[in-house]
Amino acid sequence: MPLHIPTPLIVSAPLSRTAGRPVWLKLEALQPPGSFKIRGIGLACEHYAQLGAKRFVSSSGGNAGLAVAYAGRLLGVPVTVVVPATTSERAKDLLQHEDAEVIVHGASWQEANALAQSLLGDTDAFLHPFDNPLLWRGHATLVDEVAATGRKPGAVLLAVGGGGLLAGVAEGLERNGWGDVPLLAVETEGAASLHQSMHTGQRVELEAITSIATSLGARQVCERAFELGQSGRVRSLLVSDKEAVAACTRFLDDHRLLVEPACGAALAVAYGQPEALADFQDIVVIVCGGATASADNLRQWTARFA
Ligand SMILES: *Cc1c(COP(=O)(O)O)cnc(C)c1O
Image (cartoon, rainbow, N blue to C red):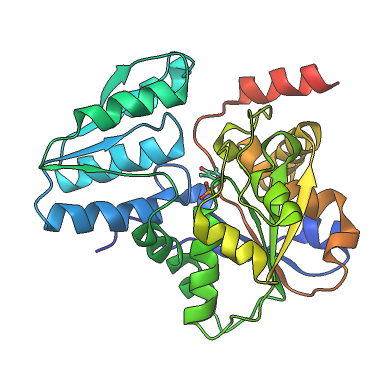
């Protein structure tokens, strides 16, 4: 039994109306730990548990850490998550509710991650948030579920952080004979590591992340995502933080689901960039979810960008 659940694929009447073409939603926000991450991380955790791992270690205070904590609890494997001091109380609470040990260390993710690495013993498994072929294989199951409906997407619209979701969706399309389906890869302007890499032809490392879409805040995409960016299958799109937040609010009204700005980034293209969709029918949007943003956060961001 996988640790993720199969999620609904529904047509969105409001988004289809706005985009002027059928828009479908793959509702990964409904995964028990709140995002698609459990697909890949669940598969990787099962794999490491079978190999005898006695503990899972993560340095993510976001959805990746939550997925590790959830997987560890279900598999009966203890989990340690090292997070920087900037991590929200809500994120720490969510991790602790999954019975994870939470260690707060350092001012930035780099320092938290360095401590996590130093803790690793022989029987520990470290779960990277995006750069692991096991994760991609697990994320690919979301495309298997789309393929089981027999409905081939005209394009897949998704958000990109470190590129694990992109790599997984590409793998899923390939293994279902749909390797020709274009990928519309969305980042916020302050987290545009794939976008800059595609434009310069080099795997750029950003100086800093300036976007509120923290789940997209990988300073450098993984090598596999970079390769995909060079393959001609990916179109890179950017939205502002303001647009991502506005899309979260509109989506909450339209579909009664609260998602993070990282997910709002993909939705913002569906709501606000009709020209980016003009070449396609039956666009599947990965509603990647996100558990760390609250209604209160959404109100605060909306006020900030007003
Ligand atoms: C992790 C995450 C992303 C980005 O995924 P990558 O694999 O890092 O590209 C987007 N949205 C949400 C909600 C996430 O948790």
